[in-house]
Image (cartoon, rainbow, N blue to C red; front, side, top):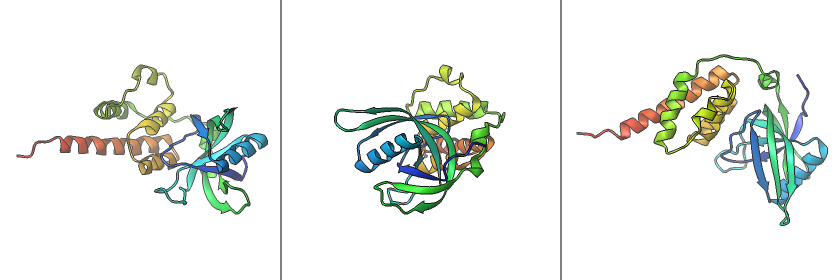
Length: 205
């Protein structure tokens, strides 16, 4: 397994689910994060993304390491980047520093399958049919023809990233280790929402 830094700068952001091998465009304008991006870009281009908990200063234990592969400075001082996901990590502890942004000691061992790309083959057709119904009922459009061209893993990541579910539910999917577990949890979540929608649409006599 390739070695990645044990201490990384972290960009905490609520409502963003970010997986390995996905791309995340970011528009940076706060000074602390401008510092983070510039320091990371000039060092190894690596940084972590983690969801915050309920708008507080605390963060979830699992996030995703990304590499800056596109970097542009705008005339008004903003930085526009594209971040490509590499592997998930587990936070061990926060590192005290004199910087405006936060750094954490992390471990990648739990998610080594993100790097080795372990091949799993799990039945997904039932889940995807449910997802089509769920998206349609929520007025979400997805090009399902193009969606079918994705790998099985990418399909599940795509559904998890864009599904109209809570941040906590998305975090739960992110933290699952295997594809089979992800599919199981996503299936449970979508089934719950479909059941709730069906129940709420019933006419009570």
